[in-house]
Amino acid sequence: MRLVIQRVKKASVRLASGKIVGEIGKGYLALIGVKKGDSQKEAEVLAEKLAKLRVMADEEGKMNLTVEDTKARILVVSQFTLYADTQRGNRPSFINAAEPKVARDIYEYFIKLLENKGLKVETGSFGDYMEISAELDGPVTILLE
Image (cartoon, rainbow, N blue to C red; front, side):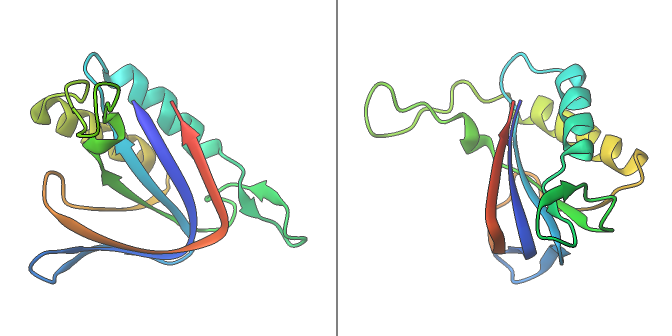
């Protein structure tokens, strides 16, 4: 499982229909990719890591606080392309990404874990084409695996 975390001032997810399905102010935009062989265990480890990640700015502007400390939110968006493989050319292969049913189950479990920790979570729309808008803060981008 792979997460790309971006600290944002605001972020939103809009479907092709124009409907906004997830929107946050200050917090994290968390792109989540699930690979073949991943299980709930990986989701548990990364949910714990994300909940404790201290990259929100304190009063002095230092990365020292968690999203919970700052009452910020997390926008979680599924992104199978995080497992793109371009070793054999320029057109990516997604053979390493988990099958959609497995990926959806782990994605939904990951979200529940964050919510069970008392974090405020918004989401994208699994498997749908989405337009993501984000105003990055810093910028701060963290990769978690």
